[in-house]
Image 1 (cartoon, helix red, strand yellow):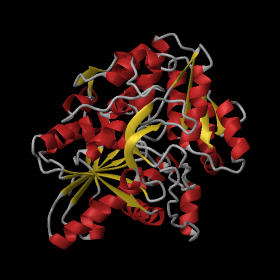
Image 2 (tube, helix red, strand yellow; image 1 turned 90 degrees about the vertical axis):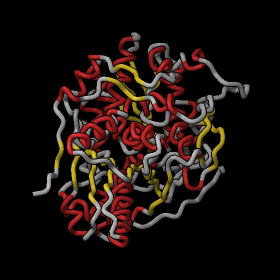
Image 3 (tube, one colour; image 1 turned 90 degrees about the horizontal axis):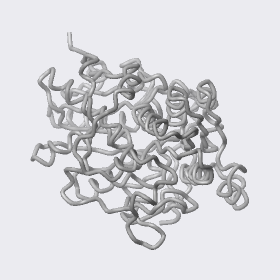
Image 4 (cartoon, rainbow, N blue to C red; image 1 turned 60 degrees about the vertical axis):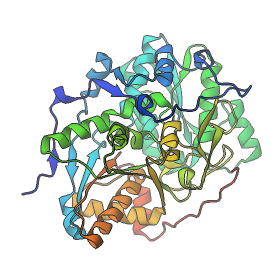
Length: 439
């Protein structure tokens, strides 16, 4: 019988995060302030603790994970490396399809890997409250739990269309004591401005970021917490790829293709960054970032400096962007509705070390349905993009006869996304062409 799960022992959880910035062929472009000059640590001190600012700007290859963070991560780490043998048979492919399953965390996604760390560092710095944005709600619920674990209050600005589509994500946040607010809201100047200009807007991560940053910057006892895009977030997620490498070593296998869905970049980075040194050393390794056709920053955006939010409160980052004014269509993969891409992911794409693909949502749900029927796991709409790409590569292997090892990150479950699956089953889910504005 084929092995379908490769498990690590608890003492094999990574004790250090891997920082890909140390191994970039050329330095990462610095964030810029209002005067178009690179900013220093002081510019971020109003919303981040010193420990996270240090990680954000670090080029150290390895950074120790604090013991209190590891203790919380024992609730779900290490996560298993699965092999989708039933899917392989259904496809008739010679490829072996592996997946790292992050849906086993208490909140059902990879987001807890960085939420736990960020809540810890802010609690150590004496903060009382964290503010944040959330798209589909995975990040908001992860930060809600982490704040509860470390004695912090939590305020979450949830993108309006997801707030309406995914009410049980809001309930999860409330269970752990967080306040969840539909964005744009009347709680901030940023939200009021957007509502005045676009009262019927579906919202966006860029708008919600503006609200959360403004909230933190105007309250001395609060800091801002971000679930994707920034360097320290990518850093915290590398436990995913480090565990995957350790699990592959146990069975004497190396992946040939790495795949992750990409909105802001965190789960994709978490899986692939620990493998970048292998690719730089000359290993033939194909790395694919998969984004929604309706919000295609890597495949159709420009590589330039842009704000991380709609209003322009954040420093400007060098990244692939559709323009900070871009409001994505209300697709069901709410966690992928972001106008830009993480600077580290963007840098790797610009250097040609990774490739990007854009997928329509109907085809992604079709792939997720096939995965659910063969492997029994109902994937989050975001993860369905990675499944779609993995199946496509497996079918390429079927056509060529190449027995490649494919690894994708199954970044979360879809238990709170049943309205999306209901729409698909009813034939009501439609592909949405992107309408790029602001580029």
